[in-house]
Amino acid sequence: MTAVPLILLAPSEEKASGGVPGRLMETPAQRWAREQLVALAKQGSPEALRKAFDVKDLALDKARSEALALSGRVPLLPALSRYAGVAFQALAAASLPPAAWTQVYILSNLRGLVRGDEAVPPYKLKLGAIPGLKAHWRKALRTQLAALPEGPVWELLPGDAADLLKGWARPRHTVEIFDAQGRAISHFSKLYRGLVAHWILKHQQGDPRRVLKGRLPGCQWAGVAENDRGGLCLRLVVER
Image (tube, rainbow, N blue to C red):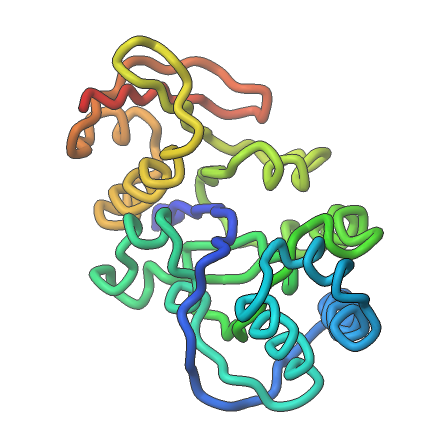
């Protein structure tokens, strides 16, 4: 039996609200991050909270309330229902079979490596909001990454999230996205990472040679080269 492809994505700032009330199951590493966030919400000055959550006014009040709620029962949704940013809209998880949700892993600043069907509460947490959080996850992720199932890994991450994987020896494939003039696309790259992830999951094709034959709306594959992660880097050109 051929191993299925695995997708690594970054979390989104935008998150859906609601969910089924429950308590989070957590590892010691996840508990540390949660408790640090709760302590920040309880003890942080208004200025510290604005900097940590990168929002203000009503949005700041909401972020603080969500953090304080993490001490008890919280509304829970599967990760691919909770994260609602551009990449996840393009991924369109609701149109994929439930089994495909288990092939997606999200690098959550609160929970570490989260599988697509794993319960996630509403929260806001920047990687730089808590001193030591980035170093904490860089260390704790080693155990989570080692437990990933077999299969070709597609690292569809921006640079700051990909930095958390430094030192991980497992080969993984990547995608670089350019416009028609050959300029790297950064702001809208989330959309195209989501489209690539959707195609891979819909067709269950993790071999880069097969992915290169796939068609994405408004895009064209324009080559492949080795990357520095032991895999291949595909070049995607956005034509529109």
